[in-house]
Image (cartoon, rainbow, N blue to C red; front, side, top):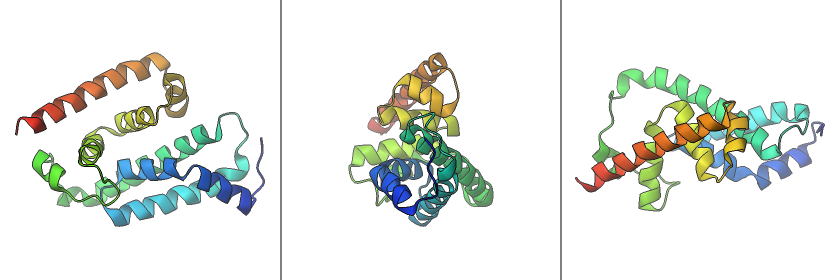
Length: 170
């Protein structure tokens, strides 16, 4: 399916799937201002790629792929720029008390903070898993095998369990 650069169609797709954009941006940005910048960049890149969408994948798969690629690039730039100001390892207590306006439930907020500490690929995998994507869909979006998705997700879940256990022991 080929979409011409039709503003109304684009806005309908964005409106129907804006949760994808917000969740990806929330997983890659801690700072509210940077998150807003990232959301704008994702939407811009979706707009630029919209006429080339060919229907090979579901529109949500296509959006995830673009949103994740933009977020990873954005994260790398921000990490490089802020490297001198960031400690090498995050203190769990500061993660728990850090204010996140988009995250309202405290357990969910802690989960997202732990997710932000993961490697880029692992962060993308768990985000898609939390969106209840199938292993096959995750594999298509990320570009790895389904068995690799399964293995990585098991390891990621174990890492998150350990972090929650450490937090509860404090």
